[in-house]
Image (cartoon, rainbow, N blue to C red; front, side):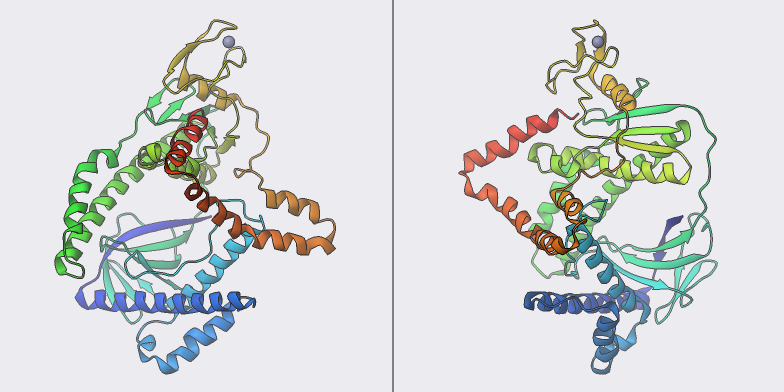
Length: 435
Ligand SMILES: [Zn+2]
């Protein structure tokens, strides 16, 4: 099993310049290759292989561009490997082969966002309080916890708040935690972050909500600075630092909660929420993003994996709120403001969230696939038996971006009032039912 270990590093002035050169070269190689692939795609040609791209954009390019020789070459190759992987994920997504979240086509990298470069193999070395990188030197590192084993790669990261990190990938063995013979269903919500089927309610810190005023002030100051000035860069870093702090508070809470749950329970059941769909709802977007449901799920799932516990996700269309967890009677739809209700059939008094959590726990599992089966997948299943027809499938797969465009364009066609109605009332009602 692979795990990431991330540490803060403190490069000096010279090293910072060298690292920035390295990031720039990685970005250059990626962007040039991507532009080349896009051109070929427009002509209807196939994507060149990783080897072809390396030859053209690293080996040959070095003859003309001397500055490409000033940085280590492994990160450049890794950059192209990443591009290759990004394309593979995208193609797999189009064909419906990918189980996890849909991948978009690779994008151009910007100088302004987070920067990264990866070293693999034996060309970097870790010491007591330094990490050695070829053509950069020995950088100060703070080992906040020991590495589990010899790392297979290290990624040097510069975040938008100008902090530097070294993120190692290490091979770890899965550790088994003692069994507790307890199972738990969890209902995620906005006012209460998590309601457990045993009745416990857990509130989350809402760092964004807390810092909203401060953030607005910083952002306002940023917009009033002159483009390209030193003051602007200072103001930008201040905004980025606050964003970083907000994220740290959120992540810390989610880590602690997920670890605690995995320790206490053998089976953890969650509802498969359509988070990206809900975030599109403008009224709820900020509140939901502030909570980090998606991250909570990812963390819990990986920790269950690591410690030999069971993780289940139930279908998002399961009527967990409407159903009485005591007798199974399916009542009417319940508006979001109905926090407590009494079952018409058996007379049990329910807390809305606890009832939902119990239902989540007791829902029989049918499929562990988290993504709903898409149209493309169904077509693929039908077509697979007759290989001659495969070309049809290819057309469907490539037609995917078209449909994405069409849905994006839709709101523009309606009048403004109809549009806002569409976005904030109807789907909201439908989606709110999920809590
Ligand atoms: Zn009942």
